[in-house]
Length: 254
Image 1 (tube, helix red, strand yellow):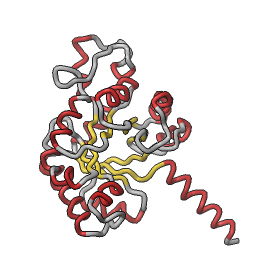
Image 2: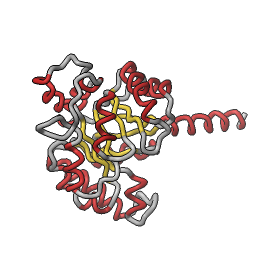
Image 3: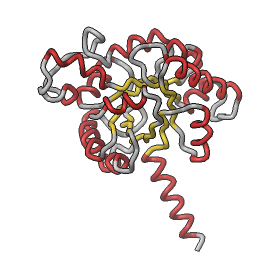
């Protein structure tokens, strides 16, 4: 649960790398965490993990030395609160299209009076009763707030979203953003590229990090050069898919 260190690094301008844990396997999540990645996102929106399996994933990632983040199924208060109570160091909030929606959602990340997160001192996210009522508010500083940019509306309002207190990362979802722009998978299209540049510019203006999930290794450097600093390098499911295909191709080419 080392969210404080990750948030400090992110807001300090460091580049960090992570991956998505999508297979629903704590063993896979631990392997990812032991790889040297800075953070691992347990994907509950599109991945196989259910809420009953989340705690095991968080234990596995913590034991591997990476920071455990969660993308819940949606951005409701209860979904976010459950992930945080179980010990997530931060939340990737999907499907927010306006700055107004973002302002509401980030209140779910923090205890009162800064936000609307429910106070329960014996949860793992509240350090299992080792923090008293007077110290709870200080835990707000440890939570990494990551908002996905997946629609033209969100991209258009990137500056206002980046200016929102509690938003630390604006995270582009390339598939959703390109599809919603009407250029599905056409990542070289000018409309998509303009949206990326707008997100990076907004983050630079407000001291936040621009994030993105990439699968093609050849795209890593161009996006880093563009200014992305919170970069997902794939997912366990993509590593398995690519690895097994490469092994079979090598064997068949003997």
